[in-house]
Image (cartoon, rainbow, N blue to C red; front, side, top):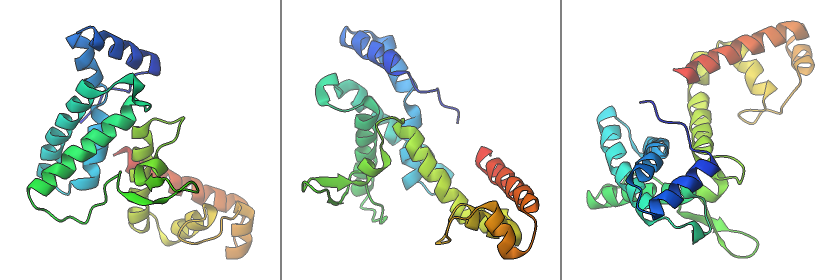
Length: 206
């Protein structure tokens, strides 16, 4: 499914102002351009194509609720508020069906900060400068790569990538250090690394 690109902060602000004045088209635009948030949250819960379709419908209800109830003075970005509404809608769905999936909500408390305030998984994912959906997608891509790396790469590519980027407990090393360690030239390490990264990129582009 192809989703519309996120609105810029200025475009989003304009939509919210128009909505406040009863503009239905602005409301529809805000929903349309934030459907990607529904998809990203659904990926955490769905295991089959049929289930994903159901979750997209359920998550869309949460997104519509977010659009209808969001106020600029909430002190948070719209995407932050929308993710919460979408996540809650899906959790209510599973509770209603009495499913125990062992999933952790993005807003489940996972600890406290130095001031004693609760920290949630979403607080770790979100940054002030990046779009929430981009953060979630990045996390999802990392999880996908880590689970498929051994099948996507040959033994030498896997060894070089894990050492080069400090994955799976390995210490991050330079191409020269890796070349010395496994007894090949630095330029050969560079070629293997480039080829391996191209494989991983193609996997993510599918």
